[in-house]
Amino acid sequence: MALVSFGLASELSSFNNCDFLSSSDLNSSQTFSIFQLSKQLKSGDRRIDLGNRVLGLIFTKASTRTRVSFQVAMARLGGQTVDLNPQVTQLGRGEPLKDTARVLSRYCDVLAIRTYSQQELQDYAKWSTIPVINALTDLEHPCQALADYLTVQEKFGELKGINLAYIGDGNNVANSLMICGAQLGVNVRICSPKGFEPEQKIIEKANSLSRFGSEISLFNDPLEAVKGVHVIYTDVWSSMGQENEQLKRRKIFEKYVVSEKLIELADEKVILLHCLPAHRGEEITEGAFESRFSSIFDQAENRLHVQQALLAVQLGGL
Ligand code: CP
Ligand code: NVA
Image (cartoon, rainbow, N blue to C red; front, side):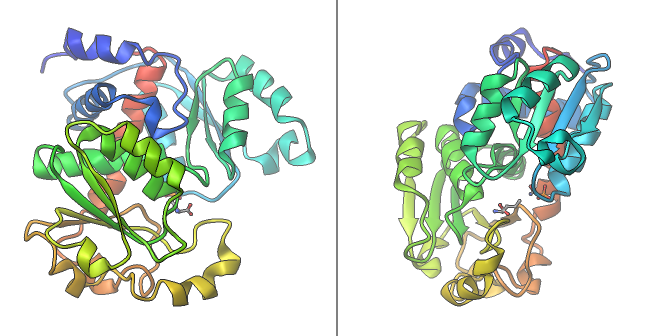
């Protein structure tokens, strides 16, 4: 089939060498173009060989999907990855980040970093001379949001006017869903217990980026939030680093379970998404997880395709 059209290539070439630290780093037309490229890569209509480029993975937290999908994406682009976990580098023995970033920039072509604070990620970006990708921080999970909305687009054909209800903690996943969704025309409803809503500044950021009439709204009642929606989304109640709050949160979130009964209140064509890993019996029931509404594994697969497209764009492979 045809190669990427000139319009798509020129749209994306503006992102060569750029960092991807937040969902706001890509504008709506760049994101739509990444979806188009992701679909071409997924179907096999397009192949891109970057010629042995190297992605460094610095992961301070556990990961299955993000780590493996980046490794496979890089292999498919003709490149390779190196594992730079703090446990196996001098980072774990206190070598300063600013030295590490400058050294790694001399060996690698791009870095994907999973860490706690967004500030630390920004510091890596400041000291690196190569592009840096947010592979999850406590504030955002922008690669996840790309895969999520590609999945929704594949299922419904378009994103404008789609109503998505996120049920649970106002966390990193919820933040990127709002910021990315607002730019793509999705109406994002965030439904959390009082005190667990996303930060006001993230809601304001999402609202300021809103395109195509997208609306961001907050709910406390899941029964209200899911009425008529096309997508129900959930994530764990306690994120990595919050393990000591698990017992307390189980009680606070007990009304925020995505169940088959809750799904019945949504649109009849509703799909169910979860970024994974899932805690069955907490944020989602076994029945809902395994139901015909679930697009969870299509969503997980799409991590690979969007990240392959993102790397190709950042490394100038178009
Ligand atoms: N969804 C996601 O980021 O999964 P991992 O923690 O396994 O990478
Ligand atoms: N909110 C979760 C997402 C895991 C992919 C966490 O940060 O642990």
